[in-house]
Amino acid sequence: MNLTTKLKTATAILVLAVSVGSVAVGTAHGATDREKHQQRGAKFAVPPGSTKLRAMCICKDGSSRHGALGNLRQFLHNDLVYVSCSVPTFTAAGQTNGSYACSTFEPLVK
Image (cartoon, one colour):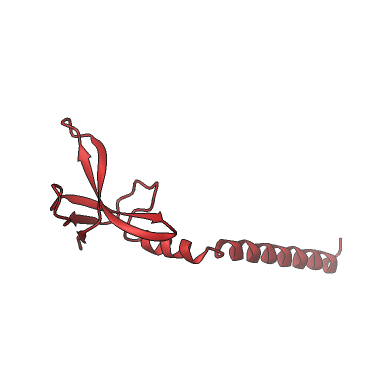
């Protein structure tokens, strides 16, 4: 294979790689508006299924959990993205055994 053939082959491979990369990047950025909104919200509130903590909150709903410390959680309902303050409940041994979704809350700031 001479130098000209090698350069043409290398150029063709590079063009193919760039084209495939562009398609892959285009697909990655093809998120729906709702998905983008959820991703922005995930910077502050824990998305469904995640165990990472983001921000804390204080329940202010007037219930028996008023004033309790919780975690900001994000959820999807009727095609809307919501955030609530999830106040964990504990067993006598100190293990988490559930949570209470507090809809009136104050986020804690650093």
